[in-house]
Image (cartoon, rainbow, N blue to C red; front, side, top):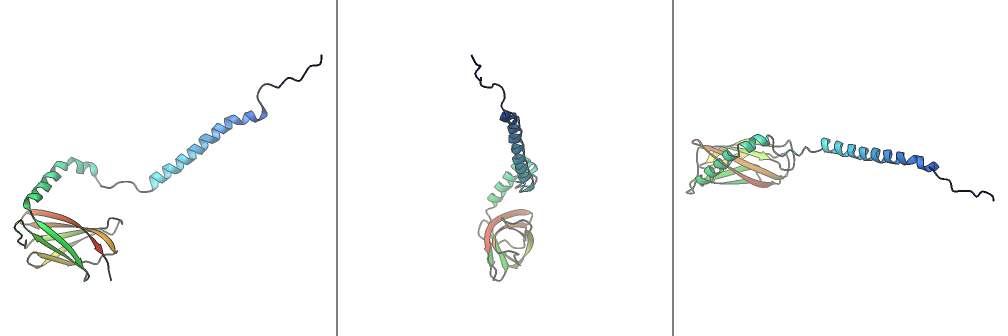
Length: 165
């Protein structure tokens, strides 16, 4: 009887590429991970508050200061008119205007870095403080006002929209 051709057993010629498939898969994986690591380290750091740990340690003092300010009962109002004047009116618990105070405005742009600035406001009438302000950009601005009067501290914050002509 003639011998019939038995099927060939053992590795096929294409089987030698199987280990290289694994090497290629992991090389592709490392390449994608490298792109993600680059993007994570070269874009926004995610830091919202500088020195967050130190500020967190002083959190109880912040709560006490907020309670003291609320006990004062003062009210402040910020306006910005088309004449590029930032106006601030501050009243005590009884509605009387607070005069002879030192008033400083901190102006920050919530959507842009590098354009924040401070300005001192002068008292133009009893309890009414004003400063000429030229904002570098139109749009949304956060105004934080710090008032110092006879060793009493008060602060208020307000968001305004600036439209320059």
